[in-house]
Image (cartoon, rainbow, N blue to C red; front, side, top):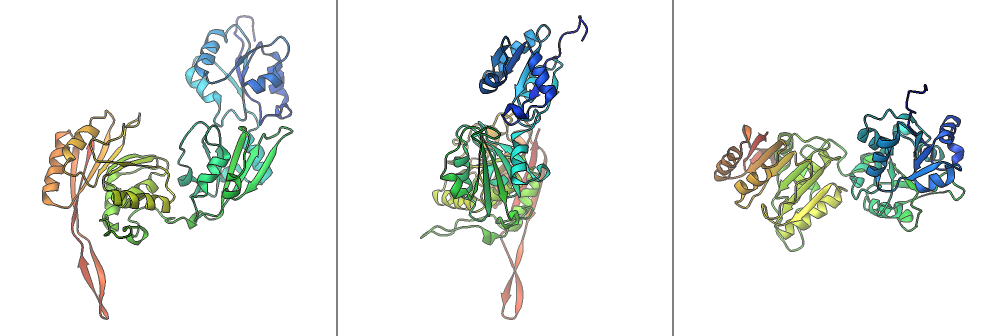
Length: 417
């Protein structure tokens, strides 16, 4: 560094916790820093006499502003727990301060440390964080992966997560919790979800979930027309709730053009057959579904539980009055399976979002088809497409088989740009 060049600010990964896991180059740069920025515990262990410190609490914006004002005149080092490429403060600082030429030194992560203890490989792993997040599609992720790493925190403690995982009664799960990794009071516990749920763990904890048989989940195939018999349709003493049939669901799903991270709003869940199929397809996204009928709500909940789905929000009520606030990024799909005569009002409200939207409506009567086409055209939808699905299924008649027709369903699809 010449006299007219500012010092390079560094973001340094300091490993799982114990200072013994910080390699020599990182230790040298930490010792040379004028200002150390990091968590309170890390600063207490690593700051040297005479060094200034700035605690990273929850005020990351204030830390970023301090770096912006000081990096050209003071030698700064940001201490990042674990690896700088894994749920790290590095990503925030580099995005917030693109003009600051950070030097980055990765460290050993607590995940690497625990994997070594458990004998698992990083390339076999799905990694999610529930630190400060109320929902990370936990069940939907764990049931389809052989190994999942979960960063815990706040209300999502290891024991709380284990209690939720116990709901996957079709899955053979083994949980490992690493507590205070690399410190003298380190504890590594392995057990079933029910066993882990009954214990308590320190805030500095990491979880591994091993699933012996992801193929044992209720439907391990691509979701396109799940068999009708997989769904519950009747509550005690009640008649079966009408359900969208398998072949029609396959067409609806294809017309919705779902992605794995889609955000779908569904009007009229019924038994939840389309809901389940969409939630399985958008396993990294979310489905918001409205249903007015109480019997249908009960059945929908049962079917969601049967398939282990936690990326669905079931809303009790009628649209448009009970429509939830749209997520910040808007919906990208809208499916209307039952509108109770409010189709035009629903389309007008949902399609008012600025983001593009794929809209699909299913209709049984000719009047509903006309209503849907008029409503979608009124809100400026384009590329209108109308498909009628007429399905016939075989039934046995003595020693032979006959084809029996089901009611035809008309599906209207369009794009709101």
